[in-house]
Figure 1: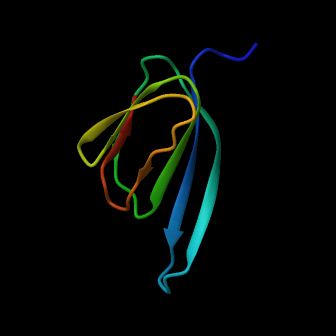
Figure 2 (figure 1 turned 60 degrees about the vertical axis):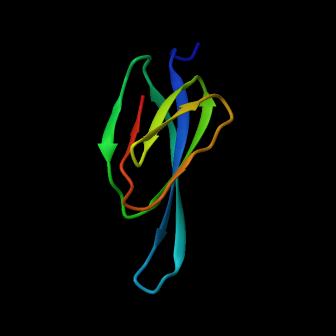
Length: 83
């Protein structure tokens, strides 16, 4: 039986100094119910894929509800946090 929580993947889309795009795929992450990822900034675009559960993501100061199957994307340098 898998642990109870919200499951998501995080993919990073980055550009090198020549403007060439690379994509790094992260593994499956689990957030415990009520857990929070603090606001952070990145020089890469982040694409989250919600595999199971629900929560909220804050991108650039705007909160958006997440459900299974949603895939929000944050731009470079925008403040991002998840609950």
